[in-house]
Image 1 (cartoon, rainbow, N blue to C red):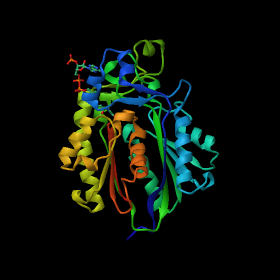
Image 2: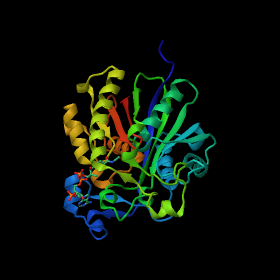
Image 3: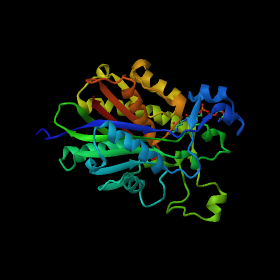
Length: 328
Ligand code: UT7
């Protein structure tokens, strides 16, 4: 039985805070060099939010742009899903903050899938649209990672940046749109990428603060290996589910964690790097915002054209990984 509806992305938006922190700025903060950061990660600079700016502040700006680009108004939005690992508060959800700031009247909830949050949230939006429940859903990836990074830890502080992206996922009766999604997880590897403090396992105490448990912790080389393996596998699985071959893929839009990871994934897939969208040099790793901002740029630059097959693919803490196949 064919489903009555398809979902497609009808509008995209991004918002990057104004302040730029270069590798040379970081050289003055920790023992590192521009050369080390560029050769190990590909990153040159990242945007950093002013103190007092929350993820919903960034997210609402990206959301307004996406709604406008979709040719819609806020009153058309029937559900808001926000992917973030840096919520405004433990609760209420950042989605509720964005709903209020937008002046929307609809349901709103957050999605906890770390850096894979955007393809995870897009899969949920796709299911709501396919089922006929909603017509227009706002999906936002928004992060103020700068507030959760240990600025004295050179192994992590050089990697991340702040930013937000948003997409409107709408009902479509065309053949194209979101064709398939694939979601994966492995909680056995939760320890290699996490913010351990502040949740119910380790509520905030003087000790958790003194032990720096509220900062992002990562076993970089372990994460690196899993990232390459899971992103390769996720791309292969989603195109299989979508019924297309690798050589039909026009664009791979991966989570922007590290240039070396992107190159390794491209090599494993035997896909030319000309087909892999990369912007990590300008933004660093923006967790859930990375994939959607890269998609927005690729569409705005005219790279992604109507009829193209686009694969979004991401991995992150959880561990989680996910991919979305879109016939643009
Ligand atoms: O979105 C999810 C997340 N995260 C990722 O995808 C990150 C995945 N991992 C990575 O991108 C890489 O593992 C890193 C970029 C984090 C690290 O690269 P690496 O090639 O795995 O380096 P390493 O951790 O093995 O460290 C190599 C050396 C170490 O020194 P020794 O022990 O060899 O003397 C580190 O102490 O580099 C040192 N190092 C640094 N040196 C200068 C670590 N960070 C820095 C730094 N500047 N910022």
